Length: 507
Image (cartoon, rainbow, N blue to C red; front, side, top):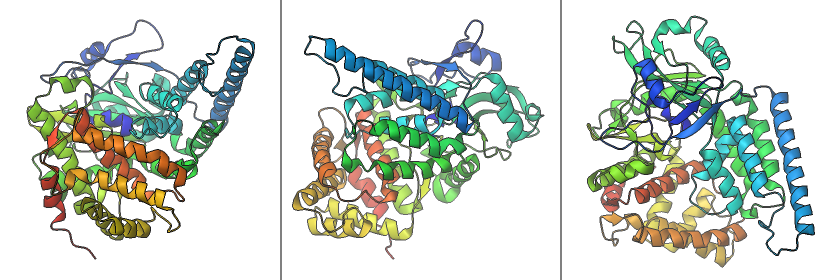
């Protein structure tokens, strides 16, 4: 569910204080009182973090309507750039602000405002880029994406009603004892409502608290055009480095977003992860059930009690909790890759909830789930194993087979690529002291600094984009390490690695 991973929970970092269009604005506490549901912002034994604001606006759903908005954005950005040029020409000051005429503070605000109103692929791209800890983008672009990540609008009531009727029929409310018409969260492709299923339709046989994710209208049909418009804006002024291969990134995103817009696909993966041979029998994890009448555009899932492991709640977690959460997320990554060969690839920490009463990590988002072929995982494990063993020749060999390299790279590129892979494998090395320390002042901090130092080199000398499969895979693995760093955790990564890969059988 990416940013809408709230779909089963009260997620503090993702729950916003909703501002409706008319009359006085109820708080999240008022929302809770109206439904009997817990306050979406309250935590269990933890302080409630700062909420953010949402506002209602109609989702532009037709292609012409969205084109009109993007055309207006382009015109306003052009006006902003012209104004900045005039200011610089007539100013006697040496301080001309950002080097790009396009990326002034005024234009950045225009971009953020429009992307949050448009929602869909543009907002998803902003959220995707904002959680990357790679520092490959100009700071002005990173600033835009970070602001977009913290913002979203929700549908007005009439538009939500239209979606619900199309998905569940005109009598859709007959399935619920209560349904809060004011969403407690909104994101790039949908918004989330608190509700209670009637006993007659509940899988538990009794009234069941659920979260209902409602997709914005016609989002799936706007993906191609939206990303095309965003690409045009991002490439204005040639701001992005050549080695970023934006065309490939956007194509991968198109495919992934189309998958995420199919809630029946997400429901199927949630059920799969809940099976006994996946996580159903693992006492460390909780996978919520999915209502059988969920559709392609409306997803109804069990309400769970955990709190987001990101943000200010971290300050209230014990060191044991921090270590356990980080260990479980890293272990889950390894098992998803080398046991299940299917991975939920969105590393956003609001997709992982911690329940201090059950001591379980609750997983609430399966929209970004990807499957990998046995051949790919065989080769990728060989590459990662070579990195862990610091075997340069093997790293290059398996990188060639996977498509990271073409064979025509110069030594500068080869050195940077191998060094970054070896650094990534450091937590799993036999020679690395365990438990491995993440967080400020740790060895991992030094490692990430060294990896970042290789990025400009690789962007300059890279001859081919990374393999398609690795976009999502690397995003999740690096996200798991980033979460461990935010938790300031210590994890026996070598034991996790050994326990998972020792039984692996290559074809």
